[in-house]
Amino acid sequence: MKNISDLMQQAQKMQADMQKKQEELANAEVRGEAGAGLVSVVMTGRHDVKRVNIDPSVLSEDKEVLEDLLAAAVNDAVRKVEAHNREAMSGLAAGLDLPGGFKMPF
Image 1 (cartoon, helix red, strand yellow):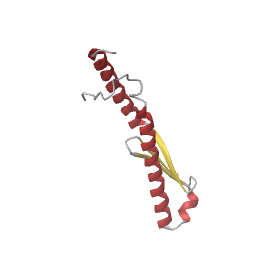
Image 2 (cartoon, one colour):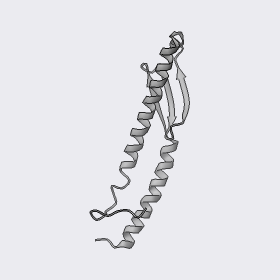
Image 3 (cartoon, helix red, strand yellow):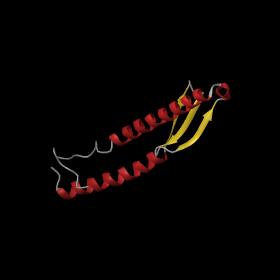
Image 4 (cartoon, one colour):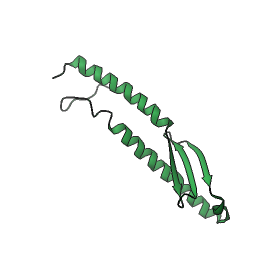
């Protein structure tokens, strides 16, 4: 069994790794789309929309159709950002060998 000093060192390393991972995730970009790619949105891990692409063929549609496609593309990007962030963060504590029921001090 590890002593408390070793556990605290592991916890500090995990916290530093988590901060680094959060920065990486914030800068990551995902692409959400709607209408089979006719409307797409590139969004960062901070949910900032960086780019919007609208296929010219959609511009002849009603305003409401274009608005719906844009909303759907943004929602798709949000779901992908959330899934990407969850997946990336899930493995951070996996390598930490903590005793059962141990609570982090932070």
